[in-house]
Length: 250
Image (cartoon, rainbow, N blue to C red; front, side):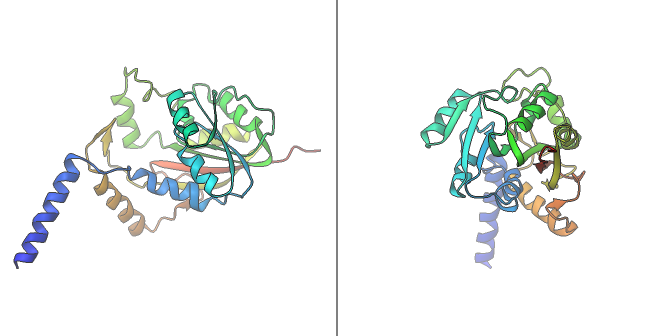
């Protein structure tokens, strides 16, 4: 009996610490990383552009898979850190890519599309630098989820550049924009089935990170919803989409 009480007290202390100081990394990366790095079949030797590469985390992962990534970002400090990890990076805007047409076998744009203020122009640029038969992989959030709606309200009037949204396009809108440049959807991954919970507002956690990780896994298991879906699943908070550029007709 004393042993059970001791375990119970330890558990209460752990849950209390989790409430006060939520663990990292955020649970939302679990399924996004699974889709991006495990579900999508990257081919060794591919030259890939990482648009919005930040600190180069995903470039490192792609390097380990035998790819040849080049990263761009507008955050000079982030690029400095990426360069210190021996990554090939450049300061550039996703609306004006400094590369020739058809330069890359693949383009990755992870959690960056929302920052681009001119979505049609961004779609044209990303498609332009993609090799015929090349692949575009992007992730974006569900703009009509309760979480996204609350975040949008909370950030009104916030001029912090890290939170300053450029657009509110949905995954379907982006797919349509890329389709105008000859890309077709190959796969959709609906990630983070946490509807309707608003677990965080800006950087303040309302529901601890580890609790949300358990909840997300539980919903996935109970509903038996596969990660790969035929279309963006409405209950998902985030999506990963893989598209292929059709070769130009001769």
